[in-house]
Image 1 (cartoon, rainbow, N blue to C red):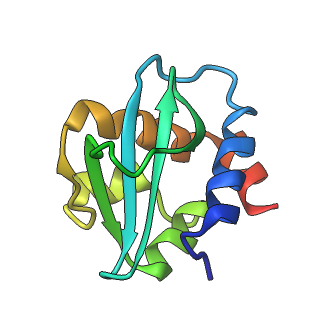
Image 2: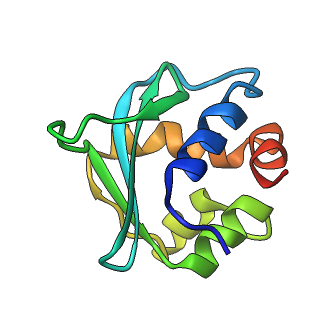
Length: 115
């Protein structure tokens, strides 16, 4: 079961290095599980580069369940398809959401993230 801690942010950062064609977008992206777990990552040129400073507001917030996040990491469900079905309801900029969707659609990213 995925948890949104510093180890998860480090895994996102490392896994995004495997992306061959990152989406050239930058944003502060928040992922939340419930009201207590939260990770805000800095996406620069389509790659996660680490956590965002506490004073910076996220451009988009993506609320997920722990089961959804596990499915997205495993590739048994697509974050993009969940968004299109209405099962994923981000709050904020759609443009800021796109690089995260592109990352989770990348097979190499997911393989490195789940390792």
